[in-house]
Length: 333
Image (cartoon, rainbow, N blue to C red; front, top):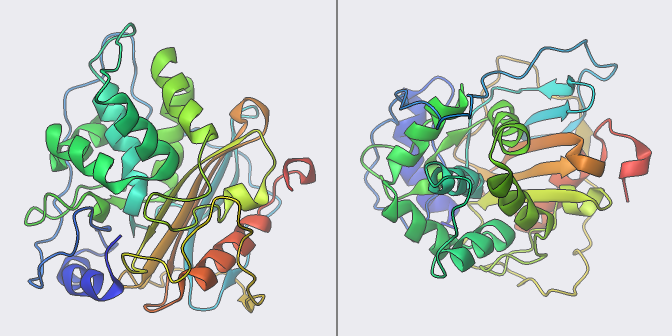
């Protein structure tokens, strides 16, 4: 994952040009110091394969008893929870707020890879381990190889049209290789999971969700990716995490059997009201996935933290937010 300084240099021109801020983290080392062009709006691509319909917006639902959850001072969070069994939202908070995706774009990379392969497609021996380690352990090298092989920015453009995503856009034209600068929102991440769970061919659903249910504690870059959903909810649960801006190597490398680092409880304040804009030049940390039997609840919590926030503090803050989500106590650790 790139450093916060590099992210600041690369992202400042882009987000001044976009009202909601469109960008994400890089996947191939540090970007050049020159500011990129603004990410262009994704153009609709060809429709889904025969028998597969577009997802579009999730159905509306009655207002939740909980309208918002507290967020730490200085942090901006986009939060959406969707109950697939009830067909209703549990919570929508800054649902369409745009964040740079970091590794969440790996879900789109995987979906695009499978899109035209057909229901009986056998993943080649060279690609299967790349897809598995990208989904389970958020491997950047695997993501970069698949990104380059399948059209880079075009991957995002195609998936926006196919899934009816509303807030997602590809990286800047001037930086096509930096997949992590894709713009996403919590609402769109829920749409992505809705497609995987309810519309994707069974073999694609089983491959992607099987790997997300088997997520590892440590990312291949030695960052601890057990913040958020994995530290809050009991099995069965799945997770795809994202982080960017904390440096190429963690201050404390992740150990597979290590406990989460102790951290002081953060001071909490009510969620910021619109139309406050997030500091898109800060450090991003995201947790997404499913909770409960049969992947009942889709959960997306995207966050941006002040530039220079230590990873352990950001992880503690995001986990605190996730623990406060209005989901049944029976699902929580």
